[in-house]
Length: 352
Image 1 (cartoon, rainbow, N blue to C red):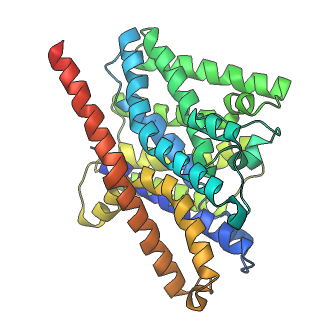
Image 2 (tube, rainbow, N blue to C red):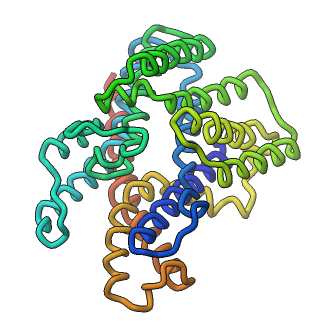
């Protein structure tokens, strides 16, 4: 187990939550500087690179059409149950309380969201307003995830070995990105599949390939690399999808490489365990904080002590609420669903 990678998943989720919290407080009129407003947005890029690494490192020995189908089925069963339940809950709440919260979600948007697809009416710019195309705003990242999964599965179906898979995905993503520059599509889904952001998954796969080839970093080298990467992720911003990949994508690659290739990458140190546990619930935290934040902002309007956006009390209450909801979501939905489908899969294997 790559415990440092798991810890980075937790850190990435926390960064995204922080980013959205600050944006919500700015929407309430809080005085927020540019650095604080953008801080945490790079958590998504860390997620993308980690996803590429994990998918590649766990499929090193797989090839063939059956493996491709099994890979896609496992990803669907891992991601969909929690997402579908929370999306349905958000749609139901918006439908029941649309008058009081001034929110309406079209049925078409709900159905497209359930399919992990962006809603295209009206047409939007995915590089800046992707969150508007989904019932749960942060679900835009799942569309990118699924495109990566499909290309990865195609490489598996073609029987390509690990290095050849990497070349194949690089070829596919480059072709898509070039088509995007040449055609500048307006359809949201086409904007996704031609976005430079897809290269961040490839960067994660590259880290896995380097690990497979036996490349390792001294702990001090990994530490310096991680420190430099962290400085870029929290201090340097971007103005387009292309520069995002060049800045945050490259820095996320360096950070994941430091975590995965360090000689002590699997060391289970005491101080890292809380972050690794946060990594366990990172997916639940990532999706559920949409509800937590919406609720918390409304509570702030009614409870004066929580009115100060960045007071220790306000931040502590929000963190406690976000972690509680995420843990509940993980234990009541995500974990039982994973165990149920794993049991069913094992039963089918025994029958065969």
